[in-house]
Image 1: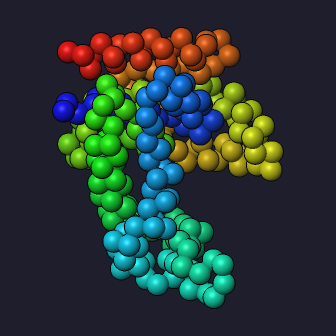
Image 2: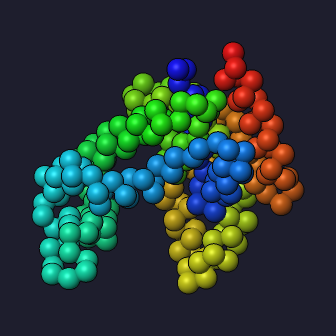
Image 3: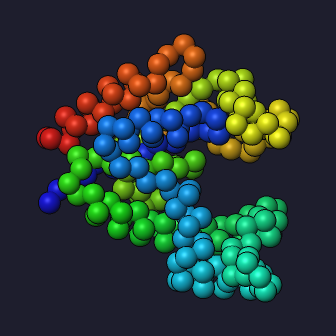
Length: 210
C-alpha cells in the first residue's frame, strides 16, 4: 500500500497551529503532535529513559518516594541544558531518533489515508536529509505578534506580556519559518482559517491521487 503524504504544520506560540490541526482532524486527517508525543516518550519509552539517564544522570527522573517517583524531572532537565548547548544537543540526539521511529510507526498505522499531518514547534524544510526529514511539504501558520500575545494572555492570564514576548524572542523567528514554508496559513482577524485549510486539503488529495 502507498505511504500517505506527510505534511508538516508549524508556527510560533499563539499562532494558532493547534486550531489549524483541529480543522484537518475535522476533515478526517490524522494529526501527530510531535511535541506532546515526545513528552509521552520521555515518560514511557524504556530505551529513551535509559538514554536520558546516560546523558544527564539519575536526577533526570524523580528519585523520591511518592506519587511523582520515576517521572521525568522536566524542570531540573531544563535547568541543566538551558545554558549548556552541548548538553542540550546530546539530549536532543537521543530524543529525536525515538520520536522519528515513533512517527514512522504512527504513519504505518494510517496507510489508508491520502495524507497525514505532523505538528511541531520546531521543524526543518521538507525533505531535509540532515534532519532525517520525511515530510513532503511544510505549512507555516502565521499571525501578527500583537495578536499572538493577546491570545496567549487569554488562555494563560498568569503570564505577563513581557514573559510572553521573551518566549516569542527565544523561538525561531518568522523570517526563518518562512524559509521552510511551502504554504502559509494566515491566522489573523483579516482572514478565515477554514477556507485556507480546505483549499490545501483539496490540493493534497489531488497530489495523493497522482
